[in-house]
Image 1 (cartoon, rainbow, N blue to C red):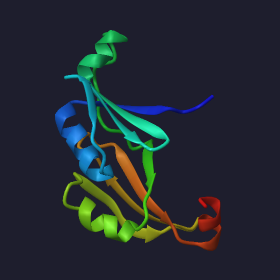
Image 2: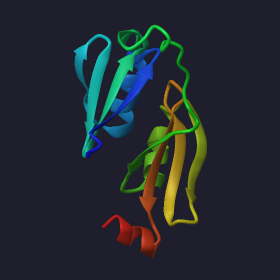
Image 3: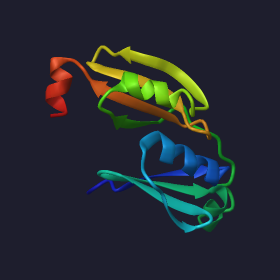
Image 4: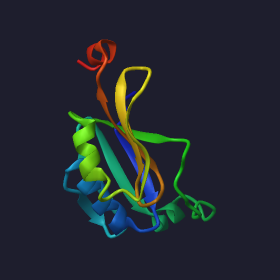
Length: 131
């Protein structure tokens, strides 16, 4: 089995796609006005409008961001990214902080309230894990 994509559902797909383009520095590919994808290395972030959920079920149309899932990106320098992200994020949950497991992490939200973690391995163990 291979994880290939993560799909987010957005109430304002244009704002969400623009946010992710700026946050992760890639250009999206739009397939319809209700669906776009951003290739982020080994995984694709797919973003669909709430209208796409009606294709699955009429009951799947009420969406808010989640605080039970974190979308994580390893970055070269989390402190440098913080300066850029604080200008576009709807909410900064945690400024860059070194975590007990050896990553320096920045936790923030996208326009729909989904949590995103930019992290940089800093401990010897974390650096070894991601090398």
